[in-house]
Length: 163
Image (tube, rainbow, N blue to C red):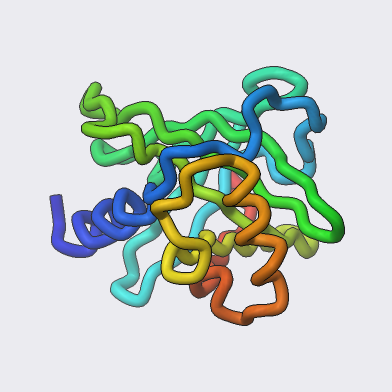
């Protein structure tokens, strides 16, 4: 594993700070416009892929970095409150058949899609603290901080993969 990939995995796993979901039972239909294979070029010239597939009408299956030995897998669903929609990711394993070491498996992602460009921003655990004990308190922390420009981390930008 190269150092860059190790850094990304550490960053992603460090982001899995939450042990409570926003959504317990997925009810919102998935956004089919984000389905497919996405890629981004990193500063070092390497390419990373993000795969988003429908698991069912209300859930996604996500793999990142897709196709690599270090790929991680998550179930995803949508959460909506007021004027904000997030994807809840529950990371459940890796391509190396490793399961999470603890119950902090949740990440929350804001996304925007413009043509064939997908931008994803992870919820910042420094603002919506990771020790929040309930789904209701987590939702409250997010909505109370919605105007804070640091509520989400820096965007990762992907383009739709074209074979």
